[in-house]
Image (tube, rainbow, N blue to C red; front, side, top):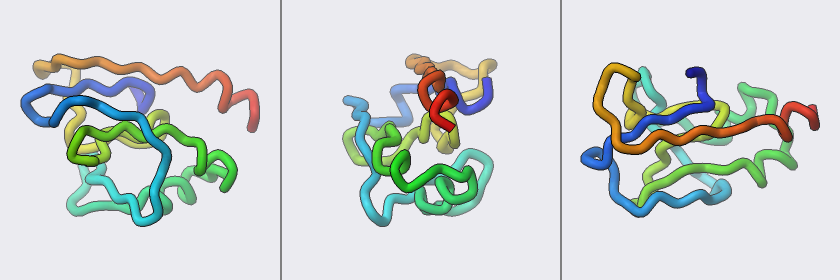
Amino acid sequence: DGNNICRLNIEDIKLPLIIRNRIDGDKMTVKGMNGRKKIKEIFIENHISQEKRDQWPILVDSRDEILWLPGLKKSKYNKPKEEKCDIILKYDLKEERNET
């Protein structure tokens, strides 16, 4: 799937889901990592320009827990194909690819 599809279980998150832009100091628990990582660092590691960082969608739940940075990173809340999930989201990166 890469980072373009996110599978979530409603038992692990708090609805509703919200798409927002970044806020200074944002951190997420990246899938497969211990601890939290700054969104700013993820953008830098992926060579995302400052302009795009300010417009990049971030999926959060109603607790403002970052669930997914579409196209870049999944959080610990992402479920593999084999596990139960209630929500499947897909992100199309066509516009971002054409701009770089």
